Image (tube, rainbow, N blue to C red; front, top):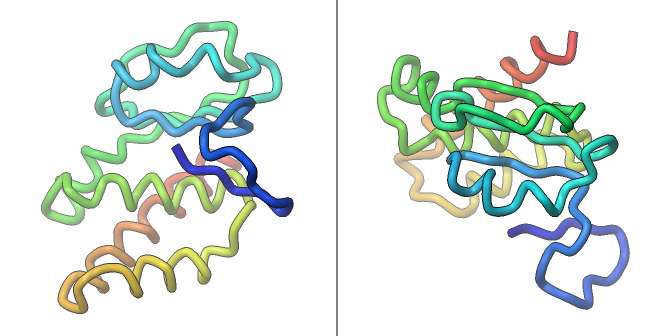
Length: 130
């Protein structure tokens, strides 16, 4: 769970999330009930998540794991593909700030690979937003 707020965060658990990113069916099934079916934004890795209950209106599906494997060579960067998608869909954080955070928290030899993964996710989400 990640809490992003412009206000002081006084509790580390997510109580009423605005956005839910699911990278497994098990995770989606466990936490989807926390989401507002009308207002919540759900971003799913459709490579690994087969179904989202139909009452949820704002669902974005992208094959993050398949893209990571096919275009980037390994599924390990699927989470960064999803981070790029989150940046585009939510608009909460500037993409350059997230890229900087990624770059500052991984080994230098993996920076370009992860930035490419981020950019792929951003492009996929941009296409979904059209």
